[in-house]
Amino acid sequence: MTQPPNQPPQGGFGPPQDQPPGAQPPPAGGFGPPPQTPPAQGGQGAAPQAPPAQGGFVAPQPPAGPPQQPPQPPPGYGYPQQPGPYGGTPGPYGYPQQPPQQPGPYGTPQPGYGPPQQPPYPGMPGAAAGAPFDGKPASGKRTALIIGAAVAALLVIGGTVFAFTGSGDGGGKKPVARQSDDPKDSATPSPTTSGGGEDPENLNKDRRPGEAKVLWYKPAPDAPASGADAPGMWITGDTAVKAAYKQVFAFRTGDGGTAWGPLAFPQKICAVTPQKSADDKVVVAYMSGGGDRAKCNQLQQLDLRTGEKGWSTEVADGGLFDSALTVELTVSGKTLMVGRSQSGTAYDIDSGKKLYDKKRYGAACFPAAFAGGTGRLVQVASCGAGTAKEHEEIQELDPATGKVRWTQTVKKGWEVTRTYSVDPLVVYLTNRDKKAWNISTFTKDGKFRSEVKVNEKFAPRCGWAVLERELQGCQGVAVDADTLYLPTDSTVSANEIVAISLSDGKAKWRVKSPVDQPMAPVKVEGGKLIAYVQPSYDAGGQVVSVPVTGSSHRTTRLLQNPQGAAEVEDTFYDGVVDWVGGRLFISSGRLSGDDDSKEKLMMAFGN
Image (cartoon, rainbow, N blue to C red; front, top):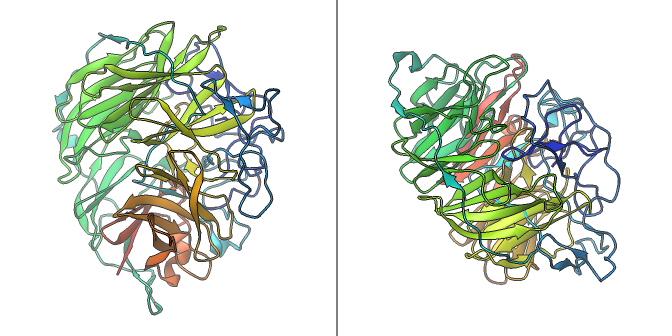
């Protein structure tokens, strides 16, 4: 992971890190191509981003402004292009990494994989929100779509299991949970709260045979000219819930009518739980104020079914250099984990009761990031920063107690960057010095299982994080019990989804997009892989299914969006996609703040 020069280092819940020379910000996100100004990143034969080196324990500072365009990184950053002196380059767990043996899909083997691609902030030079990303006329704006409600994931490289270690549970200042029934928090009017079923822009006009229809769409709420975050999207029952700037909206899934709210917050929303609990609870974090010293430390629990505000609390700072300037939220079972810069605090998501803290342990190991889901909670820690024994560790925690179940030690020089799945655990690491990265999988008890050996340029989409590591920031990737599904990189033409065995890291099968547009995984359900195919200038997007077992892996079209809505479908910035109950939902992940753009917050398609 990299960040632009003269900006706060990324590293989130660990010591801030220095900017490597010549680093390049990631390209525009979604499943579209990168912006035209910054060169494309990552992949086989490309130059992926170098992770920053660990720096000292310096308190992180808020961004000074929009990222600036840094120079292009040096070539050759990817899978090591030449074997090491002993036949391979040592991986992060001690096993040598062997160059992939399988040729690429077009017959010419090329060394190196490529890192997940990430969208820049709106306003970044050459990558403004809403700008065409594919070289087509402005009418064909490329959707920056991130697959939502798919799977989260950890990023790691091939490995060896090391000794177990204890946790650093400890006390700390206990936040006070309180009920939020202040009338000042009541709903405020919004242009998105109209009744259902309207189509004022005639997006369904002249629908062709076989095309689905736009069920409903909602304009984005007012946002600052500099833009605003619109994190999260949760579909539960017959309600679709979306956060945007200082509000949370809820729409009926069938016709888009207002289900409840919108709920207003006193300051901008800065983080949300990507998952919901089993009883449809989520937690939203918002800023403590509007000034430069404000922190993302105010928590509010919400019931997605009713819109009722539950408990709320303020996240206390930890020790020295352990700030709640930014936080990362994740849910595992009934546990909400809130990650600060060097520690974490767990709460009961139903009551707001504090359960435990995760703090420094062992030889200067600080919790750096967390990822949760399906009853599993994973912690990444940064250990011995600035010393000869500097390294990272992955631990699985008992979500209810914080007790360490197992520890996997990562070799010096490798940084755990992302998670593709928590159950099963699929992780991704980068190594700045070796200019390499890899994807590895692990068993339930934390033992190294396999390493991806497919010689391919992959393009999962990952959020652009400045201060936080965001282990769960990647979309456009799916995982089931035995297989990892990754999209190959493509800008404007057909790509493939490769099914990779978690047992040996080899390709099991691959399927090509049914049209001349890229597609990416959404989720696996009912024995089938669900994928979203991007729209083009003359056709709407598609939802397709692919059998994951058997000998045939052809796509079957489940939904064909109308051509009349293709341009609007293709303009969501940093979008989130989900497929629920035979309907496709798309929402924006970032608002541009451009009052003249007629920006949409959310759309739904169905038959």
